[in-house]
Length: 445
Image 1 (cartoon, rainbow, N blue to C red):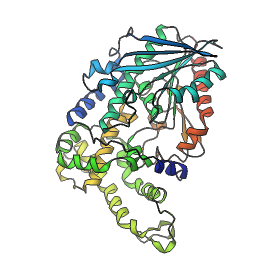
Image 2: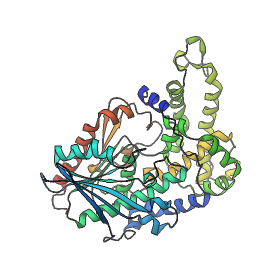
Image 3: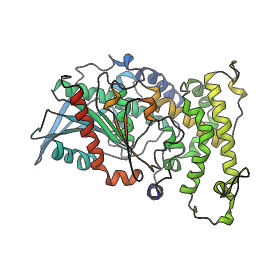
Image 4: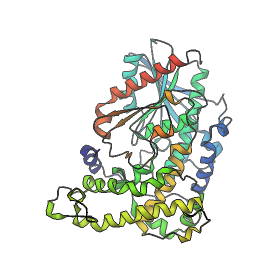
C-alpha cells in the first residue's frame, strides 16, 4: 500500500521543526526510563494515584444543548517525578461538555489531544458537540501538558516521554473522579498522537474500558524515523548533541530494555519502505526512466533514481547491520549466544547512529509492548487509514499482535483526509465500543 500524496503535500506546507532543543538532558532521560519501568506495569501503579485525588471545577458555561465546565488539578507526575514537568504544565486543565438531557445512562468519553491541537475548540467542535446530538454522550477534553499556555511544538525528544507519563496519570485522576461523580460507562479516545496517548492511559487502568484510538499505532518510533514527520525533525541538532555529549551513547543506550521482534524485523523489511519513502517524499519524485538505475541486478521493478542509489545502499547496509548490532548490544549476547561487548558492533555514520538512537529511545518509552495489555482487548476498536504517511505500519509489530482480540477498522486514504473528513466514522467507533461494553459489563458500575 502506498502513502497518501495529500499527507506528503500537507507536511510540506508546515514549516514547524520538531525537537529543536535536541534529545533532552541525559539525567532527565534516565529518570523517565526508570519511571517507565513502574508505569509500564499496571500492578505497580495501583496506588500511585489516590482514589480521592482532588479535582476542581472553576468555571461553568451554559450552551443551547450542553453545560461546559472547566476544571484543573495538579498533575500527579509532579509528585512522583518532581521537576520533570515545565512549570506551566504542573496544573492540568480540562473541559467537560455535559448534555442537558441524557439519552441512556451517563456515558463519558475522555478525548486526548492530537499533535498541535491546542486548547479545546477543535475537539469540542468536531467531536464533543456532535456526540451530544447523536448519542447524548458527554466528553471530557484534557489539555496536553506541553500545550498549556505554551502554544509550541515539543522542544526536546524527552518532552514526548514526559507528556506520555503525565497523561497516563492525569487520565487516571479523571477516570476516578468521573467514577466518584457517578458517570458510567467511561471510555477513552484520541486522534493521531491523542489516540496513542489514550492507548497508553488505558494500559494503566485496572478495569475493562472502551478504547478507540484513531490514526495511531503501536509505537512512535516509525512516526519520527520513516513517516513524513521525520522530515520535520531537527536532525542537525540531534546529531550534534549525540556527537558532543558521550553520555547518550555511553549511559543512555545501556538503559534501553526493549528488544521486541520488530526491532530485528526492521532490518530486512525497511528497504522497501525506505524506497517508497524516497519516491513519495522527494521533491522531484517524477523522474524519467533514464534517471533510474537497477540495484543488485534486479528487474525493472527495482529501478531507483541514480542520485539515490548510494543513499539507499548506505541505508540498506545500515538496516541489515546496525539494527541487528544494536539488538545484540542491548540484549548482551551475540549470534552464538555468548556475551558480547557492545563496542564490537560497527559504528556507522553519525546520522545513521542518531536514527538508531531515536528508534531505541522511542521504542523504550512509547512501544505498546513495553506496557501492560488492557484488561479487556475486545473493547478496543482501532481506526486506521490505509495510506497513512504519518503513522507507518511497515516493519513494526501490529496492535493485533500486542493486543489479541482488538478490532482494527481501515479507512481509505491517508492521515489528513481521514482527520478532515472521517470524524463521523471515529464517532461511530466510539458508540460501538461503548455499546459493546454495556452488553458485556451491564453491572460494572
